[in-house]
Image 1 (tube, rainbow over the protein chains, first blue to last red):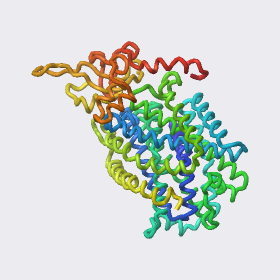
Image 2: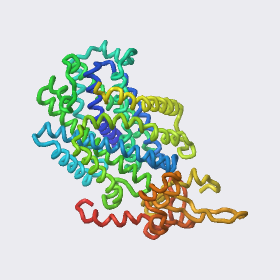
Image 3: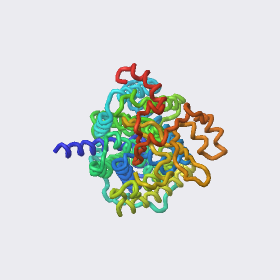
Image 4: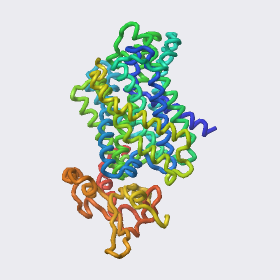
Length: 406
Length: 120
C-alpha cells in the first residue's frame, strides 16, 4: 500500500510540475489566435517529453548516470562543452523568464513594482531550496500546481464545440507562417529540456535502482501525459473565451481570466495560485538543471541530498544562476518575450542532448537487459527525426514571424 | 573489472568517486607509460580543469587556457596513480579518500562559508 501511495504521490507531483510559463503563454496564445486548430501539436510535445524522460530516467536508474554525465561520456570534452554552453544559455533564459513570471503573478496579488517582486520572488525561492529536502521541493510545487486544473474545468464548463475539437487533432494544410510558429512553440514548450535534466538527476538523488523502473515509467508517461491535459485545457478555454472576443493574451494576467470568467474571484485566485506554484517550481527546476549540468560535466559533487556545504560548488552554481537570471530581468526585458525566445531556442539545442541519451539507452554494454525494447527504439528514433525537423524550423519561423508578433 | 576494455569508451571522461562515495572529478586525461617496443601501461589518471586546453581543437586552446587555466600539476591538474583505482564500472572508484589524493580541493575551500550559515 505504501508503494502504491508513493507512486501516486510521484505521479501527482509530475502532473503539477509539468506546466511552466512557456506552456501558459504558448497554449493560451495558440487558442486565442487559432482556436482548436493547433491541438494536434500538444500531444506531439507531450509524448516527446514522455519518451525522453522515460529513457533518461531508465538510464539514471540502471547506470546512475544523469543526462550530463551521459553527454560528457559519449560526446567527450570538446563537443560536450559546446552542448553544455548551449544548454546553460537556454537554461538561463528560461530561469530568467520563470522568475519574471513569478514576479508578474505576485504583482497581480499585491501592488508593488515588478523589480521588487522579482527580487523577493527569487529570494523566496532560494530560501525554500536552501531549507527544504529534494522530495519536499518536488512535492510542494507539484501539488501547488494542481490548482491549474481550474483551467480544464473552465474549458469543460464553457461546453467546447467537440466537432471543432475533433478537427484540431489534424494539422491544417494551407496555414500561415504564424500558425507553424505556434505549432513549433507548442511542441517546444512541452519538451523543455531542463525538465529532463532535473528529472534524471532527481532519479539519482532519490537513489533509483532498476526496481524503480515502474515508478519512472508511470511518472514519465502518466504524470506528463495528464500534465499535457492541463495544456490542452488552457488552449481549449482560450479558444472558447478569447478567440471569439478577439482577446490577445499578451500579459500573463490575461491567462488567469480564463478561470475568472466562469468561476469569478475563486477561479481567479485558484488560477493565480496554480500559476505561482507552477512557474516558481519551474524556476527551481531550471536553476537546478543548470547546476546539475555544470557539476556533472566537471565531475563535482552535486545533489540536494547533501547539505549546501556538502556540495559547495553545486550550491554556488545554482545561486549564481539565480543572480544571473535576475540580472537579465533588471535590464527591463519583457518576461513574455524572454519566454518565447527561451522556448524556441531550447528546442534548437534539444537534439544535442537527446541523442547521447538515446544512444546509451540502447547500449547493452551499459544497460544490459534494460536497454531500449522495440517500442522505445522506434519511438526514440522517430522523435529524434521530429526534434531535428522542429529544431531546423524553429529559428527561421522565429525570425519570419518576429517572435510571434506577426 | 574485465581483462580488456576500451580506454576511451570506458575510462576517459568517467566520474571519479572516492571511498566515501564523494564525487571528486572526472578522468580528464589518461597518462600512459612505456617506451617503443615495450608494452604500454596506464601510469595514472589526470583530473582537473587544467587538462581542458590540451583536449580541445587547437584554435580554441588559448581561450581555454584563459578560461580554465593552464596545466599546472598539483594545482589545476591532479594525478591519481593507477594503483589507487579500485574498479571501473559506472564510475571510477578509488581505494582512498579524495582529501588524501588532493582531489576536490575547491569544494573543501568553499565549504567553510556555507557551514556558517543556518541550514548550510
